[in-house]
Length: 286
Image (cartoon, rainbow, N blue to C red):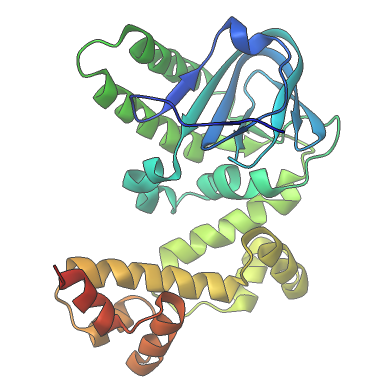
């Protein structure tokens, strides 16, 4: 049976580094997601039965259900940053506007990785020293644990998320160039322009793919069509306005990209399960 390790940390993230990570170990899973930063050297990882290579400057995300284990390494220094999905909540609105966030945290982990190939994402070389310094500051906070270390680590985690989302890039020749970044750019466009009438043809053109190819690739990664994703995005924005403002349902419909308040109410109920007014009343209930 494949062991599943729990999230075991007194802080906002669970860090692991050092010599214990530099020897082969049995495949396992986590009850959390994990950012893997290769600070030095080379590592061969088995991820879901596929062996891939990562070198200094490479970064990838292991989802909780990924079965993985270290196969071999050379002069390796790596930082693993474990986090719960809820840990992203304070940063999500800002991160959603960055194509790199979608590429690294959502899309690349869902790719079928090529046996023997190198991990497809890396930090832009000019920014890599900054990321290494950030990684070492996180390690120091977690290791020394002066008063307030949890707050400091939380702040550094937020900085890491933004820096990676801004400066991650596909490695030359990687399938990420043709499969991930085109999708990520369209998701970023939806996040920025959800109030505007966006058409499938426009998004496909932005991705550089035909409508049929874009539709197939998007649904394969997200489990939704692009227009379904956009609908869910608009409803999510509407939920926030219903919860945080006294703006009328009709005005919220227009502010979140719906051209008709009746259609908005039907679409909202289909996604959430209740009408916008019922949703707002449920939040006010003791």
